[in-house]
Image (cartoon, rainbow, N blue to C red; front, side):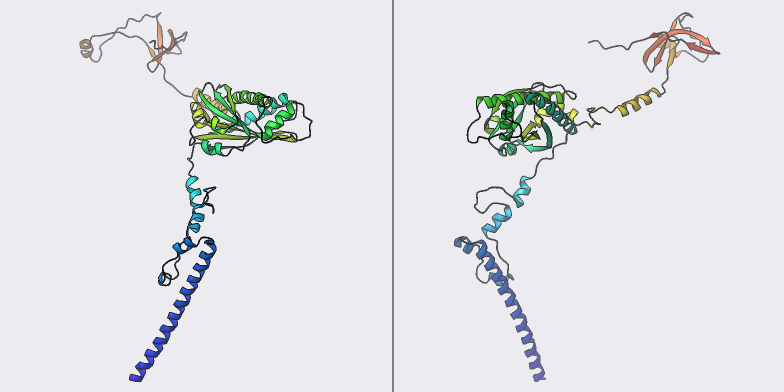
Length: 384
């Protein structure tokens, strides 16, 4: 018995030794991978690497668990390697992308489509050249984010909606500015406009662009006319976005990006309208539409009209009326005769509910009492 027990103890100790060797090899591999990753990510920063390493013995006890260093945390959060806080991604991008879900305004698509057609004709007459205007997209942006993304140099035209008592912004990029200047001053067709960077715009260039902006604002007023009459007037022109602030940086705005092509020349024009500016006509912009009828559905109107004509109503003829004391009314019994002061030649009133509508003489036709309508009673108006 003692020899058997000794053999079993020897076998169990061999198994335990094998398991311990496997655990030690796994812990060594985990520590080796962590050391390699830390040496690659923490190159050039020994102090940060030493600060992020776990104390001796902890890695083996946790089964190879490794603590992330600062650079890995920054890359996960979306900060760039230099710590400048540039473009972000990852968790910070998810946080910053929490754009408020603003309501969609279906009518704006029709308004801007109409604007594109009007601008194509107007700019063709202005430049005496073949001009094609196209709508790239209509989106919602924050005012501050858009102002920070404007490529400079550019001209920022602040316009005012007179009837809505608020402002908007029209941005013309440098390519379109030099193209319109070249076309209006007699540049040759087929040659791209020459850009002169690094200098402010001259008075002549500003005046020519101002003329184009005024024409565009007039077309935009015409595009909104079927929906709501409004006059857009140019307030001022700026080249610095800081001086073109028309609303709070966090406010939502509607951005329409337009592309203007004049042969081999052209550029972009962007129209920014804050939601606060569109608030007076928000209910109109929310309407659904068919084609370009701007909220009216003639098919539904005709159907509703036809159904109303088929509606049955009751009309009652008032044969007469008289005033009685309440005591006499309570003394009435079955068989009591009431004599009205109505004469044979008197006209009767026809009522629809409690509303008098027609008046005419009474007669008889085919054994029934009949009333011939001769007069229309206009509805009473409440005079304050």
